[in-house]
Length: 151
Image (cartoon, rainbow, N blue to C red; front, side):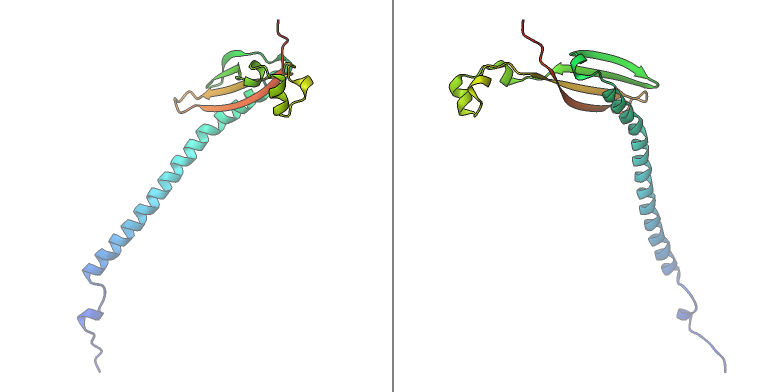
């Protein structure tokens, strides 16, 4: 008995091989795009982490509340340039005196209506720029400092 098979059962046709190669190319292209995006994301994080650590270190090294003064400081740390801005926040409660009636309506005791505030809010911004020209890291916070007596 001879075992003869027809041509259609002998193997893959050229069309089937081309379709398999096309599917493989699409899958590899998608994987390549995902890997490329991941590598770019990792590089971005690798650039920003040292900037953020420097900014947090600068924020932690600010003077204590009583010694904190409004103004700007600049400097450098390694390959990074930094700037610290300290400025008073607008405090409408401190600038607009309350009338006794207004204070009572707001639930503020009569004795506290014309008392100057004990604390002054200062806005603090720390900006750190890397030497590679990438986007800077900015940290903002508010610190309350003892109010200085009016003269």
